[in-house]
Image 1 (cartoon, rainbow, N blue to C red):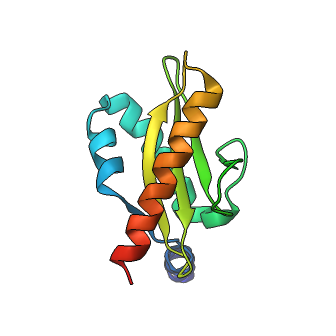
Image 2: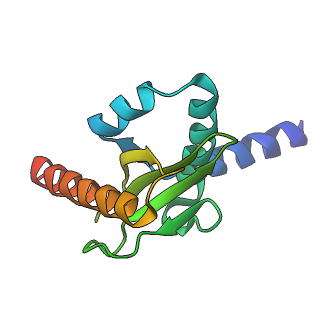
Amino acid sequence: MYKIILDNMSFSAYNICMWDVYSTEEYLIWFSNLSDFDKEEINYKVRLLEEFGPNLGRPHADTLKGSSVNNLKELRIKTNDHLFRIAFYFDVNRNGLLLTGGDKKCKDEKLFYKDLITHAEELIKLYKNYNC
């Protein structure tokens, strides 16, 4: 009996600590065009983000350098065929937002990140204006 109570307490405490992570329409459209395998790999990293929030670090996440947004970060997903990067950030209310994604495999890295950061910053502005 005590084990069941302790297991339920641990489960409840775990759920309390989860971070809220939302998605933009742009992210959902990009995500919907991926294979089921790729979606599973990405969802694993999103679950880690929900668990650890802005404290999630390498090798799963990293800060995007060159952005005007201080806390703009990327989820890092590597499969046999892809190097996915998903731009995200946490707003002032500590809600996570998956902004946009892309596959940087076989692409010019500087151009890939320039485009990813530009698009992500535009989406952040839209999100902030929408939620004011």
